Length: 190
Image (cartoon, rainbow, N blue to C red; front, side, top):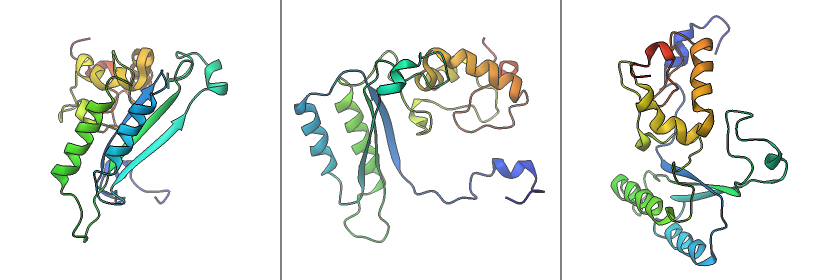
């Protein structure tokens, strides 16, 4: 954006085109058995070519030396890897799955992965926003309990500290989106 662009421009979510996709992320603390991986492989072939994607991100190494509360991102020691899986449309091709079929594929894969991934809460990576976990009220008066639905899944034990930082850094809640962190002044049931 130009230097003199108004800050409200940052709230316009339609400026940059984004492909329509639906996906999820999940973290693993235990290795997935071969049978489980074969099942994931079967899912990848249920959608037409170039519509189902799986991104594998390994963890460990130096990340194991950083405590989960040192930074907002808590997935460090004890986490082995993350899956990010998503389905995209392929406009103009007859063999494309309809949106309902793609959403169903994601839901079924989420259910399939449940015994293998983190739980209580089931963790998710904040940069892969998942509004199925809940979202802010349009009025901006989202409660702490409501924001905790996704906030604790993204930030774990650091959620309260992230809310405190957001309150100091952006007390008017200017920077917000469907799952942004609320500020304490807007939290109605803290």
